[in-house]
Amino acid sequence: MYKRVAGTKDILPQEIALWQRIEDTARRIFSLYNYKECRPPLIEELSLFNRSLGEGTEIVQKQMFVIHNKDESYALRPEGTASIVRCYIENNLDKISGFQKLFYIGPMFRLERPQKGRLRQFHHIGCEVIGSREASLDVEILALADKLLKDFGIEGYEIKLNSLGCLEDKFKLSDFLRKELKSKISGLCADCQRRFDGNILRILDCKVDACREAVKNISLHDQHLCADCKTHFSRVRVGLDTLKIKYALTPLLVRGLDYYTGTVFEITHPDLGSQDSIGAGGRYNNLVKELGGPDVGAIGFAFGVERLLLTIKPKEETTTKNLTFIITLGEKAKSYGIKLLNELRSQGITADTDYEGKSLKGAMRTANDLNAKFALIIGEDELNNGSVTIKNMVTSEQKEVKSDDLKRELIC
Image (cartoon, rainbow, N blue to C red):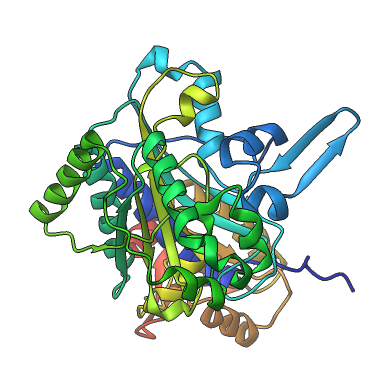
């Protein structure tokens, strides 16, 4: 017997309603903020992620699904930002309008050890805004993330906020960390010892206890930020305070991808344990230019759908579906039932029938199992009378109605 690939999950029919509710909610909220949906492909050139995410990042070094085909190398996308930026540049969206507000919903792929809320195929709901460096846009992005979570029905999350500053500021921050951690290298994990000379900021994001202990007493505030970046971040905080959006300043917060600059944030939830992030994002003001596009600012974020599902409090769903189930008794009735089934569907009424040759009792049980609202019974008497027996599966009321009056009865 074949089994699903480790780190993937079948999303079953009984689960899909919640997925659709989250996706529909996201599309509704994005529309309120005037974001347009974009659907880039699942597969991209490998070099796109190597360049944008950074050769030294954990995703590039360990977690990408890579496909080598003769002289070409591809990768299943591990995140959405690089694909959206590539799409923006390749399709000349800056020529249509330099300022673009885009969102996406879809699967991502990372080759990592499967665990709670962390799969090899997972799903992101995310957005990217390209074409502005305004602090007010940072505020909108955070307000949008907060609004989405509230409308998803999620409570108890925390927004953690920091600023990495511009590229020069990040260099200063990296130099500062090397001085602070130089005497502690031997106590770091093997990965962080390699990061010390490469992407040292990633040490701040390490989950190994020894590494967390080594960095927890480092005094990081905004001393690495230039005057412009301090002003920008101050305006972001003022905007969030004006909107009464709660956040926690987190000086040790960095994002694990090289393209981040300026405002960065992470949203965590206590129900997820040590891997507590349900979403994250920030600015990447240099990425568009580095990938061959115009020199414009950009910012975005993404939520992990599987992680959202772990934090949503279950709602009591309506059990009765707006389904009409047709039960036919005899061959003549079956022939008429096929015609009626087609007519109801063409009129916008959700309808189904028994395809298993069950008895009346068995077919009624099926209608009940499907949570149908109505059962329509058609036998010899109904055919002779030009009528249909309709049973309300909620109230158990049953009556015979003329076929011409059926639609009015079903939609009342």
